[in-house]
Each structure stands twice: as structure tokens, then as C-alpha cells.
Length: 137
Image (cartoon, rainbow, N blue to C red; front, side):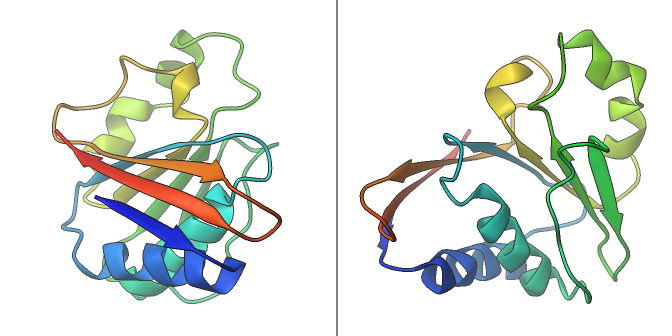
């Protein structure tokens, strides 16, 4: 499925829509360049999951945890040197904790995702316009 958005708010709304239907244990693998809107989309995902509070990019911490009925584990792989580092921080444990794992810069860890992961590719079309492509395995 492909969705076009014309603003950051619309990108957040698309994330919220997805978040409302995600079960515990879901993995969302995000792809897109710098400034594409991955964090905005994940802010919406958090809203859809009922997570309260601000959602910020975990670029320097690798993962931010947000409590809720279904917790959100927000990963940013941008600074990882190699895929093994993800497993060093307990990736397998996060997958088993019953939350939703949302991962920015998924191209850095291509073999880490379960088969049923949802892929979201965000492409910059203009200053505020984005193309979101949703792929389910």
C-alpha cells in the first residue's frame, strides 16, 4: 500500500493509524533518508498505541522505551557500526517483551527482523510531501 502525505501532521496521522492495529510483539522496520519523517511517523505510532509523553529520536541512546498498555521500543540504528551491536544491546529480549519494536535506519540491520515484520519506506517528494510505502511479509 502507498500513501502520500502533504505535511508532517499527515505523516504522524498515518503512523497513528498503523499503531491502532498493532498487536504486542509487532516489529515495524523503517527505511528512509535523513529528514524523511521516520521519527514523526513513530510519534504517530506511539499515539495509536496509547503511549503518552513526547517521543524523540534515540540517535544517541540507540533505544528509547515508552510505557503503555502495549509498550513502544523505539530503536535508531544510525550509529551502529555493525549488525552484531544490535544483539549486544539485547534485541532478542526486546522482541520477547510484548511491546512494539519500531526501528529507524533498518537497512543497517537487515537480517534482524522476524518474517512478519512490517516495512515502512518513506521517500521525500518535496519540502513537506512524503511517499509512504507499507509492506507486510
